Image (cartoon, rainbow, N blue to C red):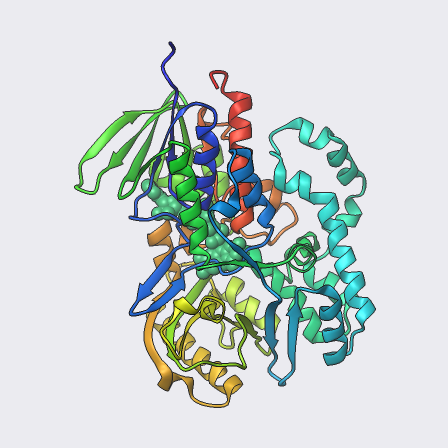
Length: 502
Ligand SMILES: Cc1cc2nc3c(=O)[nH]c(=O)nc-3n(C[C@H](O)[C@H](O)[C@H](O)COP(=O)(O)OP(=O)(O)OC[C@H]3O[C@@H](n4cnc5c(N)ncnc54)[C@H](O)[C@@H]3O)c2cc1C
């Protein structure tokens, strides 16, 4: 009997876990190597004295992507986690005191906007139809397929997209498109915000990204019973059930190649021992740029140089506050908008500093999962967009941001919140890079601040190193929970097509 082929997956982020589970169904022997002691990467958790915080993602969209992964492997997602649909996707607070609740029910949401702003119910409905149209035209092509396949563009869907290219709205910015729909600056700001879902600048990113609003409003936003980290745990369990070998505290130091063909890895065990092993295929869930730089020690090849030139997406600064008291004015997901949104993005992307007046995102999972905080307390995940690490003075950036964040929250609630903070921890861009390997702490790989960005991302199969595949937020189709899960699917589809032994 022929020896089983061996596949190494570097990293147990959500993309790596999805790829490994699918790879196991090919009959190959699959090993995941994760440098830390637990799964999830950016989607991790912190526990401290009765408080539990999701460290990264707080909102799940396109849950059918997760359902499909489990179903394709003969499993049922519901046996692993319980999804909870959100009725109020986000409560928006504006500097002038206006409040808008973004209800999951689009009819209710359109009425809310009509009641609180100068735009009409019909405008919101038309806008969501426009967003849906972009989704219908692009989703299959951009999210489900590899751009390396010619037939992706020659399929019925591919040709239809190419023929209706003006309808995907890629020639103007998100902000320009949103300003053409809405009169009221509050609505423009609300819908511009979706650029940050892939770490981009709404004043530059193509309006095609207005697809995200359809995904959130028409398809719905979800959380998970027990927290978003449960997704990582469910994917780990799926891998165990599929017979994948999972190695924690195992850092990959090198991907070994010979004549541009992958031949194995060097890994470092928890005790510091370096082990060289032969693998037929390597799938990297580490950031693409850092995979070239550190694991392949390649800064000169065409793809390494090309990727190195691309602008990383934005990062984040997160304060995890364990707060005494409960705050009915706040919802599970809240946004406290800045006064000058354009200036905020100018500071993030051009000046590369944390904004003086940032938009503050406040996520309180204990409003849904009571176990996430002690009695009469709440677990506040407070995040602002931050530039990727470019050598800034992070001590100064933290001090400045902490002060302005607490003052904005205090102003919104009408009293000084700092007196009620019982626990505090922080996550900065350099820490995100150190913990998860992403370049400069970028959350979503490269930014989408130009029309061609979607095509410039690293494809899931390397056409430079044979046997090397990429998954995760820095590879095609991009960052965010559903997309990194899809990257695992596209990578394995490509593998089955191109590796003759599978
Ligand atoms: C603060 C924050 C908020 C976010 N909010 C949302 C949200 O609300 N909704 C959403 O959908 N997405 C959100 N995201 C984005 C989402 O978390 C990511 O896109 C996704 O989790 C990334 O998955 P990944 O597969 O790229 O792996 P990563 O999470 O990047 O994990 C990579 C893994 O590889 C491991 N690794 C790296 N190098 C090595 C090595 N050499 N050897 C072994 N292991 C290695 C790392 O330890 C890590 O576990 C957020 C992210 C952050 C940080």
